[in-house]
Amino acid sequence: MPMFKAPFNGYSVKFSPFYESRLAVATAQNFGILGNGRIHVLELAPGAPGVTESVAYDTADAVYDVCWSESHDSVLVAAIGDGSVKIYDTALPPPSNPIRSFQEHGREVHSVDYNPTRRDSFLTSSWDDTVKLWAMDRPASIRTFKEHAYCVYQATWNPKHGDVFASASGDCTLRIWDVREPGSTMIIPAHDFELLSCDWNKYDDCILATSSVDKTIKVWDVRSYRVPLAVLNGHGYAVKKVKFSPHRRNLIASCSYDMTVCLWDYMVEDALVGRYDHHTEFAVGIDMSVLVEGLMASTGWDELVYVWQQGMDPRAS
Amino acid sequence: MASQPAGGSPPKPWEQEGNTSGPNPFRPPSNTSTAGSVEASGTANPGEVVSSVNRTNTAANMNALSRPVPTRPWEQQSYGTTMGGYGSNLGVNSGYGSGTYGSALGGYGGGMYGGSSMYRGGYGGAGGLYGSSGMYGGGGMYNSSYGGTMGGYGMGMGSGMGMGMGMGMGMGPYGGQDPNDPFNQPPSPPGFWISFLRVMQGAVNFFGRVAMLIDQNTQAFHMFMSALLQLFDRGGMLYGELARFVLRMLGVRTKPRKMQQPPQGPNGLPLPHQPHGNQNYIEGPKTAVPGGGGGWDNVWGN
View 1 (cartoon, rainbow over the protein chains, first blue to last red):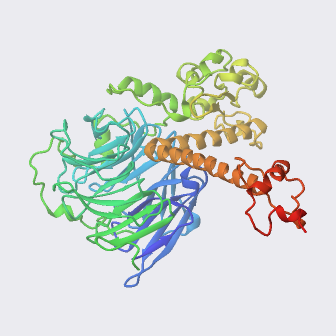
View 2: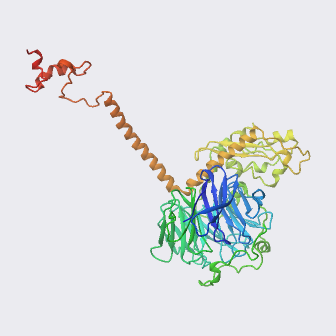
Protein backbone atom coordinates (compact mmCIF):
# COMPACT_ATOMS: atom_id res chain seq x y z
CA MET A 1 0.00 0.00 0.00
CA PRO A 2 1.24 3.51 -0.70
CA MET A 3 3.36 5.20 1.89
CA PHE A 4 4.98 8.62 1.98
CA LYS A 5 7.81 9.78 4.22
CA ALA A 6 7.61 13.45 5.12
CA PRO A 7 10.53 15.40 6.54
CA PHE A 8 8.45 16.68 9.45
CA ASN A 9 5.98 15.12 11.86
CA GLY A 10 2.55 14.58 10.39
CA TYR A 11 -0.46 16.31 11.87
CA SER A 12 -3.31 15.94 9.43
CA VAL A 13 -4.19 14.25 6.16
CA LYS A 14 -7.17 14.92 3.89
CA PHE A 15 -8.38 13.36 0.67
CA SER A 16 -9.39 15.70 -2.11
CA PRO A 17 -13.15 15.77 -2.68
CA PHE A 18 -12.49 16.12 -6.43
CA TYR A 19 -9.76 13.63 -7.27
CA GLU A 20 -9.59 10.18 -5.78
CA SER A 21 -5.81 10.01 -6.02
CA ARG A 22 -5.02 13.37 -4.42
CA LEU A 23 -4.26 14.09 -0.77
CA ALA A 24 -3.04 17.00 1.29
CA VAL A 25 -0.88 16.51 4.37
CA ALA A 26 -0.12 19.02 7.11
CA THR A 27 3.21 18.56 8.87
CA ALA A 28 5.19 20.34 11.54
CA GLN A 29 8.83 20.31 12.55
CA ASN A 30 9.84 19.10 16.02
CA PHE A 31 6.43 17.63 16.84
CA GLY A 32 4.74 20.95 16.26
CA ILE A 33 6.37 22.50 19.27
CA LEU A 34 8.94 24.72 17.64
CA GLY A 35 9.90 25.26 14.04
CA ASN A 36 8.48 25.37 10.56
CA GLY A 37 5.67 23.55 8.86
CA ARG A 38 5.03 22.15 5.45
CA ILE A 39 1.96 21.27 3.42
CA HIS A 40 2.39 18.39 0.97
CA VAL A 41 0.08 17.66 -1.91
CA LEU A 42 0.40 13.99 -2.81
CA GLU A 43 -0.73 11.96 -5.80
CA LEU A 44 -1.35 8.24 -5.63
CA ALA A 45 0.24 6.62 -8.65
CA PRO A 46 -2.43 4.73 -10.61
CA GLY A 47 -2.02 0.99 -10.49
CA ALA A 48 1.34 0.98 -8.80
CA PRO A 49 2.02 1.20 -5.11
CA GLY A 50 3.59 4.52 -4.35
CA VAL A 51 2.91 8.14 -3.66
CA THR A 52 4.47 11.10 -5.41
CA GLU A 53 4.58 14.61 -4.11
CA SER A 54 3.20 17.06 -6.64
CA VAL A 55 3.90 20.22 -4.66
CA ALA A 56 4.86 21.35 -1.16
CA TYR A 57 4.48 24.69 0.60
CA ASP A 58 6.67 25.80 3.47
CA THR A 59 5.32 27.84 6.31
CA ALA A 60 7.04 29.77 9.06
CA ASP A 61 5.20 27.87 11.78
CA ALA A 62 3.69 24.44 12.33
CA VAL A 63 0.72 23.42 10.19
CA TYR A 64 -1.86 21.68 12.35
CA ASP A 65 -4.62 21.07 9.86
CA VAL A 66 -5.50 21.37 6.22
CA CYS A 67 -8.70 21.05 4.22
CA TRP A 68 -9.65 21.08 0.57
CA SER A 69 -12.04 23.59 -0.88
CA GLU A 70 -15.35 22.07 -1.95
CA SER A 71 -15.80 24.67 -4.69
CA HIS A 72 -12.36 24.83 -6.33
CA ASP A 73 -10.50 21.62 -7.03
CA SER A 74 -7.06 23.14 -6.61
CA VAL A 75 -7.61 25.24 -3.50
CA LEU A 76 -6.74 24.21 0.03
CA VAL A 77 -6.89 25.98 3.37
CA ALA A 78 -4.27 25.52 6.09
CA ALA A 79 -4.44 26.13 9.83
CA ILE A 80 -1.09 27.50 10.99
CA GLY A 81 0.47 27.58 14.43
CA ASP A 82 1.13 31.32 14.34
CA GLY A 83 -2.61 32.03 14.33
CA SER A 84 -2.89 32.61 10.61
CA VAL A 85 -5.14 30.90 8.11
CA LYS A 86 -3.57 30.54 4.70
CA ILE A 87 -5.14 29.63 1.36
CA TYR A 88 -3.14 27.92 -1.37
CA ASP A 89 -3.98 27.29 -5.00
CA THR A 90 -2.06 24.33 -6.34
CA ALA A 91 -2.85 25.40 -9.91
CA LEU A 92 -0.73 28.52 -9.48
CA PRO A 93 3.06 28.48 -9.44
CA PRO A 94 4.60 28.21 -5.98
CA PRO A 95 5.81 31.83 -5.82
CA SER A 96 2.23 33.11 -5.98
CA ASN A 97 1.24 31.02 -2.98
CA PRO A 98 -0.28 31.44 -0.51
CA ILE A 99 -2.95 33.42 -2.30
CA ARG A 100 -4.43 34.64 0.99
CA SER A 101 -3.35 34.87 4.59
CA PHE A 102 -5.72 35.89 7.36
CA GLN A 103 -4.30 36.89 10.70
CA GLU A 104 -7.14 37.17 13.15
CA HIS A 105 -6.76 34.34 15.63
CA GLY A 106 -4.80 35.19 18.72
CA ARG A 107 -3.21 31.78 19.06
CA GLU A 108 -2.55 28.54 17.20
CA VAL A 109 -5.25 27.56 14.71
CA HIS A 110 -5.93 23.91 15.29
CA SER A 111 -8.57 22.86 12.77
CA VAL A 112 -10.15 23.98 9.55
CA ASP A 113 -13.27 22.60 7.89
CA TYR A 114 -14.85 23.54 4.58
CA ASN A 115 -18.62 23.81 4.35
CA PRO A 116 -19.65 20.69 2.38
CA THR A 117 -23.22 21.75 1.56
CA ARG A 118 -22.94 25.43 0.68
CA ARG A 119 -19.32 25.12 -0.48
CA ASP A 120 -18.72 28.84 0.03
CA SER A 121 -17.30 29.10 3.53
CA PHE A 122 -15.08 27.42 6.06
CA LEU A 123 -14.57 27.28 9.81
CA THR A 124 -11.38 27.53 11.81
CA SER A 125 -10.98 26.71 15.48
CA SER A 126 -8.17 27.94 17.61
CA TRP A 127 -6.43 27.81 20.96
CA ASP A 128 -7.68 31.36 21.52
CA ASP A 129 -11.00 29.64 22.46
CA THR A 130 -12.86 30.85 19.39
CA VAL A 131 -14.26 29.49 16.17
CA LYS A 132 -14.25 31.74 13.13
CA LEU A 133 -16.37 31.62 10.02
CA TRP A 134 -14.80 32.70 6.75
CA ALA A 135 -15.92 33.00 3.15
CA MET A 136 -13.61 32.83 0.19
CA ASP A 137 -14.83 36.13 -1.23
CA ARG A 138 -14.45 38.12 1.99
CA PRO A 139 -11.28 39.91 3.04
CA ALA A 140 -11.87 39.10 6.70
CA SER A 141 -13.78 36.63 8.84
CA ILE A 142 -17.57 36.90 8.79
CA ARG A 143 -18.15 36.02 12.38
CA THR A 144 -16.38 34.90 15.53
CA PHE A 145 -17.97 32.40 17.91
CA LYS A 146 -16.73 33.04 21.42
CA GLU A 147 -18.17 30.88 24.11
CA HIS A 148 -15.79 28.11 24.85
CA ALA A 149 -13.69 28.62 27.93
CA TYR A 150 -10.67 26.71 26.64
CA CYS A 151 -8.96 25.82 23.39
CA VAL A 152 -11.28 24.68 20.61
CA TYR A 153 -9.62 21.67 19.04
CA GLN A 154 -12.05 21.07 16.22
CA ALA A 155 -15.08 22.61 14.54
CA THR A 156 -17.02 20.54 12.00
CA TRP A 157 -19.88 21.43 9.69
CA ASN A 158 -23.04 19.38 9.71
CA PRO A 159 -22.93 17.37 6.48
CA LYS A 160 -26.54 18.09 5.60
CA HIS A 161 -27.26 21.47 7.10
CA GLY A 162 -25.25 24.43 5.83
CA ASP A 163 -25.87 26.61 8.87
CA VAL A 164 -25.09 24.16 11.64
CA PHE A 165 -21.75 23.09 13.02
CA ALA A 166 -20.30 21.49 16.15
CA SER A 167 -17.20 22.40 18.12
CA ALA A 168 -15.15 20.27 20.52
CA SER A 169 -13.17 22.05 23.18
CA GLY A 170 -10.77 21.51 26.02
CA ASP A 171 -13.43 22.92 28.36
CA CYS A 172 -14.95 19.39 28.17
CA THR A 173 -18.02 20.51 26.24
CA LEU A 174 -19.34 19.92 22.79
CA ARG A 175 -21.32 22.84 21.43
CA ILE A 176 -23.75 22.91 18.55
CA TRP A 177 -24.07 26.20 16.70
CA ASP A 178 -26.30 27.75 14.09
CA VAL A 179 -24.48 30.56 12.32
CA ARG A 180 -27.65 32.66 12.42
CA GLU A 181 -28.00 32.44 16.19
CA PRO A 182 -26.11 34.78 18.52
CA GLY A 183 -24.96 31.97 20.79
CA SER A 184 -24.58 28.23 20.73
CA THR A 185 -27.84 26.30 20.44
CA MET A 186 -26.76 23.34 22.51
CA ILE A 187 -24.09 22.61 25.10
CA ILE A 188 -23.30 18.98 25.74
CA PRO A 189 -20.94 18.26 28.64
CA ALA A 190 -19.69 15.28 26.72
CA HIS A 191 -16.69 13.99 28.68
CA ASP A 192 -15.02 14.50 32.02
CA PHE A 193 -11.76 15.32 30.30
CA GLU A 194 -10.83 17.49 27.36
CA LEU A 195 -12.53 16.83 24.05
CA LEU A 196 -10.06 16.60 21.21
CA SER A 197 -12.28 15.95 18.22
CA CYS A 198 -15.85 15.65 16.94
CA ASP A 199 -17.56 14.59 13.74
CA TRP A 200 -21.10 14.24 12.40
CA ASN A 201 -22.69 11.09 11.12
CA LYS A 202 -22.98 11.57 7.38
CA TYR A 203 -26.30 9.73 7.12
CA ASP A 204 -28.05 11.07 10.20
CA ASP A 205 -27.55 14.77 10.81
CA CYS A 206 -28.54 14.48 14.46
CA ILE A 207 -25.82 12.06 15.45
CA LEU A 208 -22.27 12.96 16.17
CA ALA A 209 -19.20 11.45 17.82
CA THR A 210 -16.70 12.99 20.21
CA SER A 211 -13.27 11.82 21.26
CA SER A 212 -11.49 12.74 24.41
CA VAL A 213 -8.43 12.58 26.60
CA ASP A 214 -10.38 10.03 28.69
CA LYS A 215 -9.52 7.45 25.96
CA THR A 216 -13.13 7.00 24.87
CA ILE A 217 -15.25 7.90 21.90
CA LYS A 218 -18.87 8.77 22.61
CA VAL A 219 -21.69 8.89 20.12
CA TRP A 220 -24.44 11.46 20.75
CA ASP A 221 -27.88 12.19 19.44
CA VAL A 222 -28.67 15.91 19.64
CA ARG A 223 -32.34 15.14 20.23
CA SER A 224 -31.58 13.30 23.46
CA TYR A 225 -28.21 14.46 24.57
CA ARG A 226 -28.39 13.56 28.26
CA VAL A 227 -26.81 10.17 27.72
CA PRO A 228 -24.59 9.05 24.88
CA LEU A 229 -25.90 6.54 22.36
CA ALA A 230 -22.67 4.58 22.69
CA VAL A 231 -19.37 4.70 24.51
CA LEU A 232 -16.51 3.11 22.60
CA ASN A 233 -13.68 1.83 24.78
CA GLY A 234 -10.50 0.36 23.39
CA HIS A 235 -7.90 3.03 22.89
CA GLY A 236 -5.08 3.05 25.39
CA TYR A 237 -4.49 6.78 25.42
CA ALA A 238 -6.22 10.00 24.43
CA VAL A 239 -8.14 9.76 21.16
CA LYS A 240 -6.88 12.50 18.90
CA LYS A 241 -9.29 12.38 15.95
CA VAL A 242 -12.60 10.74 15.21
CA LYS A 243 -14.25 10.53 11.82
CA PHE A 244 -17.49 9.05 10.50
CA SER A 245 -17.31 7.03 7.32
CA PRO A 246 -18.69 8.79 4.23
CA HIS A 247 -20.00 5.48 2.94
CA ARG A 248 -21.22 3.42 5.86
CA ARG A 249 -23.71 4.75 8.35
CA ASN A 250 -22.34 3.11 11.48
CA LEU A 251 -18.63 3.11 10.78
CA ILE A 252 -16.27 5.35 12.72
CA ALA A 253 -12.52 5.66 12.36
CA SER A 254 -10.29 7.04 15.08
CA CYS A 255 -6.63 7.58 15.79
CA SER A 256 -4.96 7.96 19.12
CA TYR A 257 -1.88 8.72 21.12
CA ASP A 258 -1.66 4.96 21.68
CA MET A 259 -0.29 4.91 18.08
CA THR A 260 -3.17 2.92 16.65
CA VAL A 261 -5.91 3.62 14.16
CA CYS A 262 -9.20 1.92 15.05
CA LEU A 263 -12.41 1.22 13.21
CA TRP A 264 -15.68 1.01 15.10
CA ASP A 265 -19.26 0.02 14.42
CA TYR A 266 -21.11 1.90 17.12
CA MET A 267 -24.36 -0.06 16.63
CA VAL A 268 -23.00 -3.49 17.51
CA GLU A 269 -21.93 -4.78 20.87
CA ASP A 270 -18.31 -5.50 20.06
CA ALA A 271 -17.84 -2.13 18.55
CA LEU A 272 -14.14 -2.40 17.75
CA VAL A 273 -14.08 -3.90 14.27
CA GLY A 274 -10.54 -3.12 13.24
CA ARG A 275 -7.23 -2.03 14.70
CA TYR A 276 -4.16 -0.94 12.76
CA ASP A 277 -0.85 -0.52 14.56
CA HIS A 278 1.26 0.54 11.59
CA HIS A 279 2.39 3.82 13.14
CA THR A 280 5.40 3.78 15.40
CA GLU A 281 4.61 7.13 16.97
CA PHE A 282 1.44 9.00 17.95
CA ALA A 283 -1.18 8.69 15.21
CA VAL A 284 -2.77 12.12 14.96
CA GLY A 285 -4.32 12.45 11.50
CA ILE A 286 -6.89 10.30 9.75
CA ASP A 287 -9.24 10.57 6.81
CA MET A 288 -11.53 8.39 4.72
CA SER A 289 -11.98 8.97 1.03
CA VAL A 290 -15.35 10.27 -0.10
CA LEU A 291 -14.75 9.04 -3.65
CA VAL A 292 -13.38 5.53 -3.05
CA GLU A 293 -15.20 3.40 -0.54
CA GLY A 294 -12.93 1.91 2.09
CA LEU A 295 -9.86 3.94 1.19
CA MET A 296 -8.23 5.36 4.31
CA ALA A 297 -5.26 7.56 5.08
CA SER A 298 -3.43 8.24 8.30
CA THR A 299 -0.42 10.18 9.46
CA GLY A 300 1.49 10.51 12.67
CA TRP A 301 4.57 11.73 14.44
CA ASP A 302 6.64 9.00 12.78
CA GLU A 303 6.59 11.30 9.72
CA LEU A 304 4.79 8.70 7.64
CA VAL A 305 1.61 8.96 5.62
CA TYR A 306 -0.15 5.67 4.91
CA VAL A 307 -2.93 5.14 2.38
CA TRP A 308 -4.63 1.78 2.42
CA GLN A 309 -7.82 -0.07 1.74
CA GLN A 310 -9.86 -1.14 4.73
CA GLY A 311 -9.11 -4.69 5.71
CA MET A 312 -5.61 -4.62 4.21
CA ASP A 313 -2.37 -4.16 6.07
CA PRO A 314 -1.22 -0.57 5.61
CA ARG A 315 2.41 -1.70 5.62
CA ALA A 316 1.99 -4.35 2.93
CA SER A 317 3.42 -3.07 -0.30
CA MET B 1 -8.40 30.81 -7.87
CA ALA B 2 -9.55 29.84 -11.26
CA SER B 3 -9.69 26.27 -12.37
CA GLN B 4 -12.66 24.41 -11.05
CA PRO B 5 -15.70 22.51 -12.12
CA ALA B 6 -18.56 24.93 -11.87
CA GLY B 7 -20.72 22.94 -9.51
CA GLY B 8 -18.06 22.33 -6.89
CA SER B 9 -17.07 18.92 -5.63
CA PRO B 10 -18.88 15.76 -6.82
CA PRO B 11 -22.00 14.80 -4.86
CA LYS B 12 -21.32 13.07 -1.58
CA PRO B 13 -22.40 9.47 -1.11
CA TRP B 14 -24.77 10.46 1.68
CA GLU B 15 -26.53 13.07 -0.43
CA GLN B 16 -28.31 10.40 -2.43
CA GLU B 17 -30.01 9.11 0.68
CA GLY B 18 -32.73 10.80 2.62
CA ASN B 19 -32.49 11.48 6.29
CA THR B 20 -34.14 8.48 7.80
CA SER B 21 -34.02 9.37 11.44
CA GLY B 22 -37.02 11.67 11.47
CA PRO B 23 -37.24 15.37 12.23
CA ASN B 24 -34.21 17.23 13.44
CA PRO B 25 -34.13 20.09 15.90
CA PHE B 26 -32.36 22.53 13.62
CA ARG B 27 -33.92 25.55 11.99
CA PRO B 28 -34.40 24.98 8.28
CA PRO B 29 -31.40 26.11 6.28
CA SER B 30 -31.45 29.50 4.59
CA ASN B 31 -31.42 29.68 0.86
CA THR B 32 -28.65 32.24 0.62
CA SER B 33 -24.91 31.96 0.94
CA THR B 34 -23.39 31.38 4.36
CA ALA B 35 -22.20 34.96 4.55
CA GLY B 36 -25.63 36.20 3.46
CA SER B 37 -27.41 34.10 6.02
CA VAL B 38 -25.16 35.33 8.82
CA GLU B 39 -25.58 38.93 7.76
CA ALA B 40 -29.35 38.58 7.47
CA SER B 41 -29.47 37.29 11.02
CA GLY B 42 -27.62 40.33 12.31
CA THR B 43 -24.96 38.32 14.04
CA ALA B 44 -22.14 39.14 11.63
CA ASN B 45 -19.07 40.71 13.12
CA PRO B 46 -16.55 40.83 10.33
CA GLY B 47 -12.84 40.82 10.89
CA GLU B 48 -12.87 40.55 14.65
CA VAL B 49 -9.35 40.17 15.91
CA VAL B 50 -9.20 37.87 18.90
CA SER B 51 -6.95 38.93 21.70
CA SER B 52 -6.37 37.20 24.95
CA VAL B 53 -8.03 40.11 26.72
CA ASN B 54 -11.28 39.67 24.86
CA ARG B 55 -11.09 36.00 25.24
CA THR B 56 -10.90 35.95 28.99
CA ASN B 57 -13.72 38.43 29.42
CA THR B 58 -16.15 36.81 27.08
CA ALA B 59 -15.46 33.40 28.44
CA ALA B 60 -16.37 34.63 31.86
CA ASN B 61 -19.51 36.38 30.69
CA MET B 62 -20.96 33.93 28.24
CA ASN B 63 -19.87 30.58 29.41
CA ALA B 64 -22.70 28.55 30.85
CA LEU B 65 -20.34 25.95 32.11
CA SER B 66 -20.55 25.05 35.75
CA ARG B 67 -17.49 22.91 36.12
CA PRO B 68 -14.08 24.41 36.80
CA VAL B 69 -12.16 25.18 33.70
CA PRO B 70 -8.46 24.38 33.51
CA THR B 71 -6.02 27.22 33.60
CA ARG B 72 -4.19 27.82 30.38
CA PRO B 73 -0.74 26.38 30.88
CA TRP B 74 1.02 29.31 29.29
CA GLU B 75 -0.59 31.88 31.48
CA GLN B 76 -0.56 30.24 34.83
CA GLN B 77 -0.99 32.69 37.56
CA SER B 78 2.39 33.32 39.00
CA TYR B 79 3.87 36.25 40.78
CA GLY B 80 2.49 38.85 38.47
CA THR B 81 -0.06 40.15 40.86
CA THR B 82 2.26 40.35 43.76
CA MET B 83 4.71 42.43 41.85
CA GLY B 84 2.03 45.00 41.78
CA GLY B 85 1.77 48.32 40.28
CA TYR B 86 1.18 47.54 36.67
CA GLY B 87 -0.96 49.86 34.85
CA SER B 88 0.24 52.69 36.92
CA ASN B 89 2.87 53.72 34.46
CA LEU B 90 1.09 53.10 31.23
CA GLY B 91 1.05 55.53 28.46
CA VAL B 92 -1.90 56.74 26.51
CA ASN B 93 -4.09 53.69 26.36
CA SER B 94 -4.13 52.53 29.89
CA GLY B 95 -7.00 50.18 29.11
CA TYR B 96 -4.73 47.50 27.93
CA GLY B 97 -2.45 47.61 30.84
CA SER B 98 -4.68 46.91 33.72
CA GLY B 99 -7.24 44.43 34.76
CA THR B 100 -7.26 41.05 33.17
CA TYR B 101 -4.23 41.68 31.12
CA GLY B 102 -2.04 42.49 34.03
CA SER B 103 -3.36 39.88 36.34
CA ALA B 104 -2.93 37.19 33.77
CA LEU B 105 0.67 38.11 34.03
CA GLY B 106 0.65 40.17 30.98
CA GLY B 107 -0.62 36.96 29.55
CA TYR B 108 0.95 35.75 26.47
CA GLY B 109 0.40 38.11 23.67
CA GLY B 110 -2.12 40.19 25.42
CA GLY B 111 -0.49 43.29 24.22
CA MET B 112 0.39 42.05 20.83
CA TYR B 113 -3.13 41.85 19.62
CA GLY B 114 -4.14 45.02 21.18
CA GLY B 115 -6.93 45.88 18.85
CA SER B 116 -7.30 48.85 16.64
CA SER B 117 -6.13 51.44 19.07
CA MET B 118 -2.63 50.04 18.99
CA TYR B 119 -2.10 51.94 15.81
CA ARG B 120 -2.21 55.17 17.67
CA GLY B 121 0.82 54.13 19.54
CA GLY B 122 1.46 54.78 23.14
CA TYR B 123 0.18 51.64 24.61
CA GLY B 124 2.32 50.52 27.39
CA GLY B 125 3.30 47.09 28.41
CA ALA B 126 2.26 44.68 30.99
CA GLY B 127 2.94 44.54 34.64
CA GLY B 128 5.13 42.19 36.43
CA LEU B 129 8.70 42.59 37.36
CA TYR B 130 9.83 45.15 34.91
CA GLY B 131 6.73 46.91 33.87
CA SER B 132 5.68 47.81 37.31
CA SER B 133 9.03 49.08 38.30
CA GLY B 134 8.77 51.72 35.71
CA MET B 135 12.12 50.85 34.25
CA TYR B 136 10.99 49.69 30.87
CA GLY B 137 7.26 49.52 30.95
CA GLY B 138 6.36 53.08 30.53
CA GLY B 139 4.64 53.68 27.29
CA GLY B 140 5.13 57.29 28.09
CA MET B 141 8.84 56.98 27.93
CA TYR B 142 8.81 56.10 24.30
CA ASN B 143 5.85 58.15 23.45
CA SER B 144 7.50 61.28 24.59
CA SER B 145 10.53 60.75 22.51
CA TYR B 146 8.77 59.66 19.39
CA GLY B 147 6.00 62.09 19.38
CA GLY B 148 3.38 59.59 20.25
CA THR B 149 3.50 57.75 17.01
CA MET B 150 5.63 54.90 18.00
CA GLY B 151 4.13 52.52 20.42
CA GLY B 152 6.06 51.94 23.51
CA TYR B 153 6.63 48.48 24.63
CA GLY B 154 6.71 47.01 27.97
CA MET B 155 6.93 43.65 29.36
CA GLY B 156 6.25 41.66 32.41
CA MET B 157 8.00 38.57 33.44
CA GLY B 158 7.63 36.30 36.34
CA SER B 159 8.76 32.86 37.22
CA GLY B 160 5.79 30.84 38.18
CA MET B 161 5.18 27.53 39.74
CA GLY B 162 3.31 25.93 36.91
CA MET B 163 5.40 25.55 33.85
CA GLY B 164 8.33 27.15 35.50
CA MET B 165 7.93 30.40 33.73
CA GLY B 166 5.30 32.78 32.68
CA MET B 167 5.99 35.77 30.61
CA GLY B 168 4.05 38.45 29.05
CA MET B 169 5.03 41.13 26.68
CA GLY B 170 3.60 43.62 24.37
CA MET B 171 5.02 45.50 21.51
CA GLY B 172 3.86 48.58 19.82
CA PRO B 173 4.17 48.84 16.11
CA TYR B 174 7.06 50.65 14.65
CA GLY B 175 6.45 54.22 13.81
CA GLY B 176 6.87 53.66 10.14
CA GLN B 177 4.19 51.05 10.00
CA ASP B 178 1.58 53.27 11.48
CA PRO B 179 -0.73 54.24 8.65
CA ASN B 180 -1.58 57.42 10.48
CA ASP B 181 1.98 58.34 11.19
CA PRO B 182 2.48 61.97 10.34
CA PHE B 183 6.24 61.69 10.29
CA ASN B 184 6.32 58.66 8.01
CA GLN B 185 9.60 57.37 9.32
CA PRO B 186 11.11 54.41 7.52
CA PRO B 187 11.05 51.26 9.60
CA SER B 188 14.21 50.90 11.57
CA PRO B 189 15.83 47.57 12.31
CA PRO B 190 14.51 46.07 15.52
CA GLY B 191 16.30 47.23 18.59
CA PHE B 192 17.70 45.05 21.27
CA TRP B 193 14.59 44.99 23.39
CA ILE B 194 12.36 44.21 20.44
CA SER B 195 14.46 41.26 19.40
CA PHE B 196 14.74 40.17 23.00
CA LEU B 197 10.98 40.25 23.32
CA ARG B 198 10.65 38.21 20.15
CA VAL B 199 12.94 35.59 21.58
CA MET B 200 10.89 35.62 24.74
CA GLN B 201 7.73 35.23 22.73
CA GLY B 202 9.26 32.17 21.13
CA ALA B 203 9.95 30.77 24.56
CA VAL B 204 6.37 31.40 25.66
CA ASN B 205 5.12 29.68 22.53
CA PHE B 206 7.39 26.76 23.16
CA PHE B 207 6.26 26.17 26.70
CA GLY B 208 2.65 26.78 25.76
CA ARG B 209 2.76 24.09 23.12
CA VAL B 210 4.60 21.63 25.31
CA ALA B 211 2.00 22.21 27.97
CA MET B 212 -0.82 21.69 25.48
CA LEU B 213 0.68 18.43 24.36
CA ILE B 214 0.92 17.23 27.91
CA ASP B 215 -2.66 18.39 28.34
CA GLN B 216 -3.87 16.31 25.45
CA ASN B 217 -1.92 13.33 26.46
CA THR B 218 -1.88 13.14 30.22
CA GLN B 219 -1.74 9.39 30.45
CA ALA B 220 1.17 9.13 28.07
CA PHE B 221 3.02 11.75 30.01
CA HIS B 222 2.33 9.93 33.23
CA MET B 223 3.60 6.70 31.71
CA PHE B 224 6.67 8.46 30.44
CA MET B 225 7.47 9.86 33.85
CA SER B 226 6.97 6.52 35.60
CA ALA B 227 9.12 4.80 32.98
CA LEU B 228 11.78 7.39 33.62
CA LEU B 229 11.60 6.85 37.35
CA GLN B 230 11.78 3.12 36.87
CA LEU B 231 14.82 3.58 34.68
CA PHE B 232 16.51 5.63 37.37
CA ASP B 233 15.65 2.95 39.87
CA ARG B 234 17.09 0.23 37.67
CA GLY B 235 20.06 2.45 37.01
CA GLY B 236 20.65 2.70 40.72
CA MET B 237 20.63 -1.06 41.11
CA LEU B 238 22.91 -1.50 38.15
CA TYR B 239 25.29 1.03 39.57
CA GLY B 240 25.39 -0.85 42.85
CA GLU B 241 26.21 -4.12 41.12
CA LEU B 242 28.84 -2.43 39.01
CA ALA B 243 30.47 -0.81 42.01
CA ARG B 244 30.66 -4.14 43.82
CA PHE B 245 32.25 -5.78 40.82
CA VAL B 246 34.87 -3.06 40.42
CA LEU B 247 35.71 -3.17 44.11
CA ARG B 248 36.18 -6.90 43.90
CA MET B 249 38.49 -6.50 40.97
CA LEU B 250 40.51 -4.08 43.04
CA GLY B 251 40.76 -6.67 45.72
CA VAL B 252 38.43 -5.11 48.19
CA ARG B 253 36.27 -7.75 49.75
CA THR B 254 32.95 -6.41 50.76
CA LYS B 255 32.40 -9.47 52.96
CA PRO B 256 35.76 -10.96 54.18
CA ARG B 257 35.48 -14.69 54.09
CA LYS B 258 36.64 -16.80 56.97
CA MET B 259 38.54 -20.09 56.78
CA GLN B 260 40.21 -19.37 53.57
CA GLN B 261 43.34 -20.94 52.23
CA PRO B 262 46.09 -18.40 51.80
CA PRO B 263 47.48 -18.11 48.37
CA GLN B 264 51.05 -19.14 48.29
CA GLY B 265 54.03 -17.61 46.61
CA PRO B 266 57.14 -19.42 45.50
CA ASN B 267 58.54 -21.73 48.13
CA GLY B 268 55.28 -21.80 49.90
CA LEU B 269 55.78 -18.38 51.43
CA PRO B 270 52.78 -16.23 51.87
CA LEU B 271 52.41 -13.49 49.32
CA PRO B 272 53.46 -10.06 50.45
CA HIS B 273 50.71 -7.62 51.25
CA GLN B 274 48.40 -10.40 52.09
CA PRO B 275 46.07 -8.71 54.53
CA HIS B 276 45.43 -11.74 56.60
CA GLY B 277 48.86 -13.15 56.09
CA ASN B 278 49.84 -13.42 59.71
CA GLN B 279 46.76 -15.08 60.80
CA ASN B 280 46.89 -17.50 57.95
CA TYR B 281 50.51 -18.21 58.58
CA ILE B 282 49.74 -19.39 61.99
CA GLU B 283 46.66 -21.29 61.11
CA GLY B 284 47.92 -22.58 57.82
CA PRO B 285 49.58 -25.76 58.96
CA LYS B 286 46.54 -26.82 60.83
CA THR B 287 44.29 -26.59 57.84
CA ALA B 288 46.72 -28.01 55.33
CA VAL B 289 45.78 -31.29 53.83
CA PRO B 290 47.93 -34.00 55.34
CA GLY B 291 50.41 -35.30 52.90
CA GLY B 292 49.62 -32.58 50.42
CA GLY B 293 52.51 -31.29 48.42
CA GLY B 294 51.87 -27.73 49.40
CA GLY B 295 51.55 -28.47 53.09
CA TRP B 296 53.55 -26.58 55.66
CA ASP B 297 54.99 -29.79 57.02
CA ASN B 298 57.36 -29.98 54.15
CA VAL B 299 58.87 -26.56 54.58
CA TRP B 300 61.15 -27.50 57.37
CA GLY B 301 61.48 -31.08 56.41
CA ASN B 302 64.38 -32.58 54.63
